[in-house]
Length: 299
Image 1 (cartoon, rainbow, N blue to C red):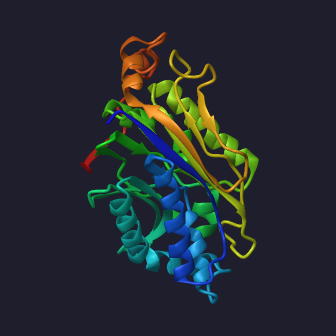
Image 2 (spheres, one colour):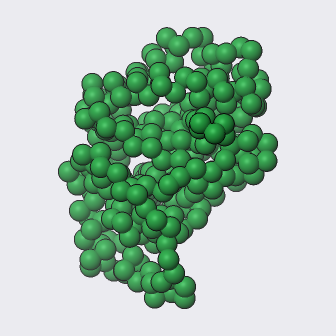
C-alpha cells in the first residue's frame, strides 16, 4: 500500500481517575482514527505520562512518575496491540519512560502492526530537561520498520532536529518519518516543526508530527503542552508550495487526518524539480559515514 490516510494526534494530557478511564480514552481515540479511515495512527512523545496520575503517591514527583509509568507499560502495550488488531491499523503508541535492566530509563516509542508485530524505537538524543533534571538517558539503536505501509522511521521530538539520523534512515529506504513530540512552549514546538519540515525537504519524504497539548499542572514532567499536529512533504510538484500538506488547530485536542502517497515520494526522488535526496553526498562532508540503522520486519 503506497497511498493511505494517516491520523496525527494532538493528544491532551489529562488526570485519569483509574485504569478504566485510560482504557476508555485510548479506545475512543483509536476508534475515531479508524472511523476517519486511517491506516496509521500516530500518538505523541510522553503522552503516556498521564498514567502517572493513577498513582497519587508519586504523580507529583519526577522520579516516582518514571517508575509508576514504566511499570504499567506491559499493560499499556497489550491494550495497543489489541486495538491495532481489532481495527486493522498501525499505531505508534505515545512514548513512555521505560526502565532497562541496568536501572536507567529511556524514552521509548512502540509501533504496533495489526498483525501483532511490534517495533521499538528509543529516543537517541536527550533534551537538557531529560538529561539534567529527569534522569532519562539516550537509547538505541536507530531503527527502520518495514511495514505493509512502507518503510517507516521514527525520530522522537529532539531527534528530528539532527539531520544525520533521518538521513541514515533515508539511505535505508525510509519514505515516511514519524515525529512524536512533547513541547512545553511554542519555541519548542517550532523547533520540532521546522526540524520535521527540513527532514521532509532533505529526504524528499513525508513527515508526520504529533504533539501533546493542554495543561497538566499536577505533573512536574508534562505540565504545559503546546503544539499542532501536521503532515509535511517536500515542496515540489504534487505537494503544496510550502510543503505543509495539513496542519491542525494550535493546542486543540483533535485528530488531524491527511492522505499520504509514498509512490509520489518515490517519483519525486527519481524525477523531481530538485533531487535533494540524491544530491546529499555532493555537499561538503556529505559522504561521511552515517549512523547504523537496524531494519525491523513488521510485515
